[in-house]
Image (cartoon, rainbow, N blue to C red; front, side, top):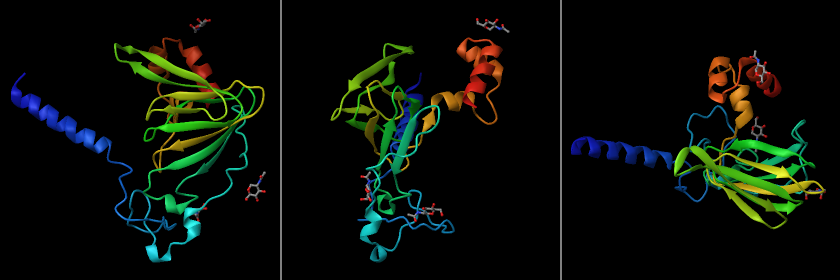
Length: 224
Ligand SMILES: *[C@@H]1O[C@H](CO)[C@@H](O)[C@H](O)[C@H]1NC(C)=O
Ligand SMILES: *[C@@H]1O[C@H](CO)[C@@H](O)[C@H](O)[C@H]1NC(C)=O
Ligand SMILES: *[C@@H]1O[C@H](CO)[C@@H](O)[C@H](O)[C@H]1NC(C)=O
């Protein structure tokens, strides 16, 4: 391996690392209240900014986190999200908050946020929550970091890592999630694998999961 090749690789890696951390920049101005105009052609971090002279207190205010949303059937989870779409003053600030309500024995299935770490705190009930990180000594394995969480407990899922929350208590569980992106993204692991459009070829899934095609078809039916 020549020194030149090494330096080039290092430079390219550094470039991509700097790109990887370049979303949700520090804002360049005091505020950038999102203007709700889909016809506008200039975008700053996703939305154009309102003229700061026209900003009002309402742009920086939201309500509704005191009540649960409607639970998604099957999973029994309800989400109420306060993000840049419902609170325009959040634009470019790199933060989103959401309230989740989990019915008894319900789960927020394995998922991850490509652009944000998620910090949760339990308000009511008891959760079993955890995330998976690759094992640095063996990349073909992972490590589970998990915890039983009671009211007031705080747990964080590092950016991009697969995680879950499960209601193990005797009543409904309520928790808040803070995400350090205005657009954290959401990848639901089972659905993204078994319910894509177009579908991943069943031969690929069968080989990847060491199952036969009948078993893959069952999973595709379950999640589509
Ligand atoms: C939630 O807050 C809103 C706004 O303050 C209020 O109108 C509503 O009555 C509250 N709901 C509950 C269940 O506390
Ligand atoms: C922005 O526009 C969308 C689509 O018309 C609408 O659903 C949403 O409520 C609007 N948001 C605000 C803060 O006005
Ligand atoms: C697929 O695997 C299941 C479980 O091992 C087995 O019961 C079934 O007969 C297999 N189907 C085919 C078509 O090989």
